[in-house]
Length: 182
Image (cartoon, rainbow, N blue to C red; front, side, top):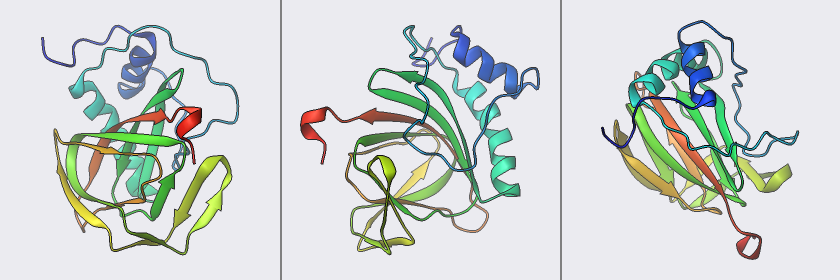
């Protein structure tokens, strides 16, 4: 079996069940890396199937198209990191996470992730989050199915979807250790 095998984890099973319409899952159009309530911490290994993630992502993609252009869910919470599935049908604004690094794994589709540069119209939000209307002087990274990009904490980034492009991404958000937080 490859890197991703058959899903046996309860969290993944509920995601798969939701993808098949068996169980509704909580979904949010705007994804925030901080959680207001104390999340249940996952302590078992998480085994994922890329095909099942892509199917679940298609449902999120329909939500994105019908709404703001972005939809996502948190799949599992762990000590110091959590996993998400997100889908985009439109470009997003600039963002920066002071306390979280992002690992983006493209499950399906394509787009461009800009990194670095300077945030335009930056607004500080709670939890070490910064949002802006875009980036200036950033480096573009074309992303396709199977690509992985690591965005260190404190790095401005922005997702760009050209007309007709869509992307589904498995996200691993890793909290920076206390000593390295800005």
